[in-house]
Length: 116
Image 1 (cartoon, rainbow, N blue to C red):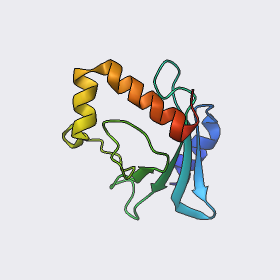
Image 2: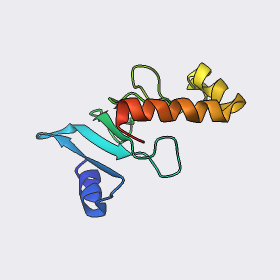
Image 3: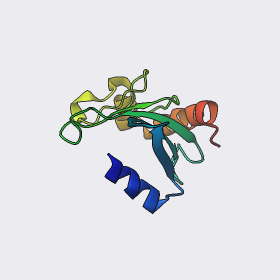
Image 4: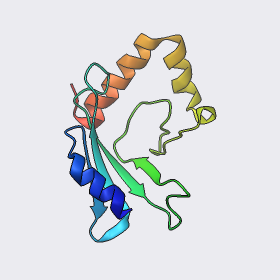
């Protein structure tokens, strides 16, 4: 984990910041900004990251603390990386009516993440 921390510190990205909570290398906070040209543009999204003791053999648990409208994030902020775990209603709208998806994602970004 300390190698990942050094890499993050070295890159110093304007798109995200992350690091341990206090001295606990297994619990991190992160902030990411929504990418330009997306309905998340200018949004500031907070995340909570917990590394298991057997990391890197088991992936970290990442949770959005800022509410976000996305097919891979449920209402509790849990992220689903496997395609079979899409939030079905949001995924259906994303596939069937992209404009409605982007309108709702933008509205949530403005309301919850300060975007606009």
